Length: 264
Image (tube, rainbow, N blue to C red; front, side):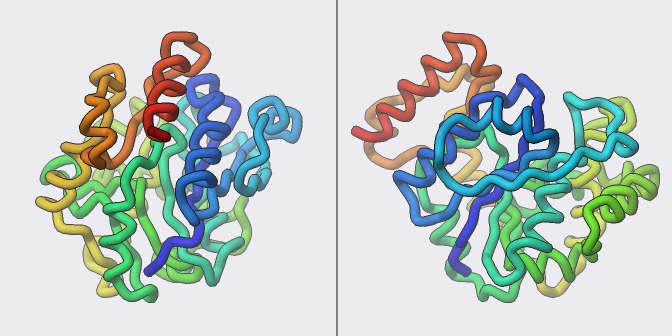
């Protein structure tokens, strides 16, 4: 399974503003994977956000009836899963958080060992501990595989309402936090978790490997994105989780310096 596209989602939330231009340029300059943005909102909102011409951008409408908090909007993520399923049927897509900068290809190399008719859960079966709650990041499959296993509708509006209508049935699968109190943030992961654990086409990356090779080798937002330049040069790190928001000049400066150091 060789990844063709990495797919991101975004709306007009200021928390993630400015990140697409950075990650899309890194992917374009350092990989052969096409960065792809699924933007939920208006054309005006999109034009105010996307400033650089890297990757591909698709505009999808918001559906207010399924949004209880625009700053914690589960439907933005699910619109990206809908897009992978319906727009890129024969391409291998990987979903990623827009605040993640790729540094190493070690996960992609591991995924290449898997047949391309499978669905790969890149962060393993237990990313939140033993909670039976799958992370949506780094789920990889061909578009038609996403569509078949997740039973995604042809219509985006129908698909969002389908998931929204069963939200209370899914909250037990969102075990890392209280979804209802968080405006149903994580509803996408709850639905994924309800579908994937027992499916015979799903491949989970080994939890120990994920912990040792990915999770312990992140440049983390929680530690203010501090990193060892020598380790960066030697290829120790896997990814960087950006500090946010980038409207804070100190945060932006830190991330731009990291990208510059990656070039060395």
